[in-house]
Length: 277
Length: 300
Image 1 (tube, one colour):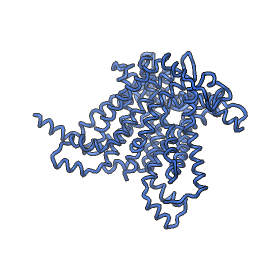
Image 2 (image 1 turned 90 degrees about the vertical axis):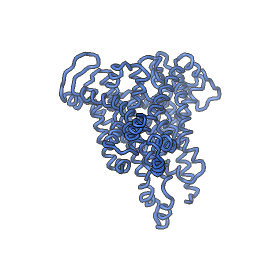
Image 3 (image 1 turned 60 degrees about the vertical axis):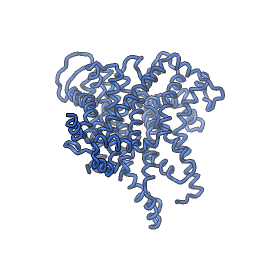
């Protein structure tokens, strides 16, 4: 074990402390500004700490804006996208990691190229496409378009993850006469839970956060997602920083909880390809 | 009969498993891309009907426009400075987090918080933090006498790009921290032992033991982040809208404005394709540099 002397220790703690303040302060200030009396928000010089809590901004957002409706819209879209994308990409990833067939390399490369397509390149033609198929302004259409980003990424990640699973186990099952489908569902999938969790988390977070497609494809307020709803709140007639910060806080918290509790899966997903050795 | 179907499915499972995902991708990716390439050679308009084939006119037109050159330069500047700073902060924090010190779990949690923020919220929140009138950061800077009066960080062309880069660095460095830390933790301790016995100093240990071991993960994260940052739309669009005076105009924003505000579908398609070509060159170059392609898929 390496020895660290006291001066070095102090130096490290000071550096980490500074970076931690850099990273945490905006979160603190967002929450702190949203739970104080309205007059304190615009006070100069600003009060770093408040003693009188006031949640009226939350009441405003929850009662006067369609926040709850948009929250459910976002949740529904994110969950459905996550389920579809995780299943489809697990199947495709398994195929690319294990099966032998012609054109596999081409498909693998194609998936990687699909991943780098700029959203901005797809947005206009996708809009026309969705409208032509009667999927304009529909949640299903939006869910489909989220696959443009999530599917290639999850396939890439899961293929790398499946490759880390030793093939011996499957060989044994094949000798016992198991079908490929059975091997996939009873051996590969249970062994890949961390990889699948990583894929699901990435897809969920991307769908929850996505802004451009939701802005362009859904044009009625009752169907809007949180990202777009909060943006429109800013352009609305009553421009109120506290309401924006309160709704932002409520939108961030689900994701923050996922990150704090499930961060090990996020690392797993990213490093599957890299640390395979 | 059933047995026959089962056998068929078993034999072709590789292809069958690819069908659902790939058909969705072909439907929502291949069609738009081909449409886009076609549109980029026409003068189609969002509202007016009827259009004709104009050859390379759109491409020549955008190359001649000053805003395009500005946007191109801004996109490169934004991406390059963001990635370099994110990498440096990620490397420093990961190296310290990897030390056997107390309280590292707390610091690790603190450091990944920015990455949990949706881009739209980041933009709104930082507008509030950097606001000239009420912004707390101006207040801090004035308190420690770094500045004499509040600076309109997002409202002045001299500061807006630096501010946008700063916001993006804040958001993106945790991915480097997490990734590099995972790489560091996978280095066998024997390698450090050997370096110590050989009498390697701090710098040599870092260069010959640490760096080669984290190179692949760093490469992958740099590729992913470069693609994401290069394509960033929402963050900058909501933060500054590309202004003031085009000082934060990037290619994605330019493409969006040409398409949705001016309705020039041919031209916006040409900008998007330009963006995509740059990314292809980038990615190809990176994959060669870090030999990732071969490592991951070459052995299949």
